[in-house]
Length: 136
Image (cartoon, rainbow, N blue to C red; front, side):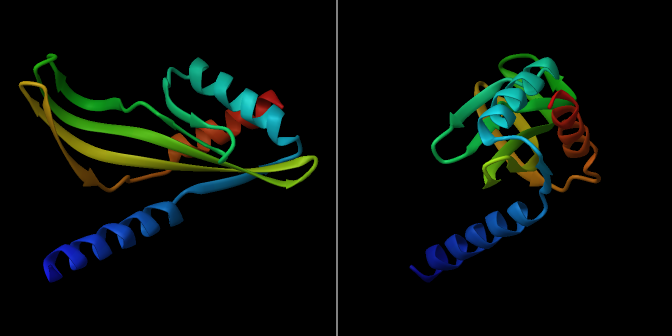
């Protein structure tokens, strides 16, 4: 039972640390406009939206390949996905935080084994926030 509690604590701490690494930018636009433009920018940049919870203020993307091989039943390589969090600062300003998750994936016969990896830079996050800003 102690092992389960320790493991759960480590996972929760890891989630907290991962969230602290995101980049945040505040835009001079209402949250509805920033949300709509962010979805459009993600699609234009080739990101597919996996889950979207407008009421909570976040959306996540499907993961994309950074490098490696992917043959359907077999895959091995690095992947990444994004999570965007939206928060209305006031009626005309919205803060957007972009968190990127990088992980190593190995798939054998449709069973994925993912291991977390460290992102070496925040270029993807910066590029996305810049593109959102240009559309507003």
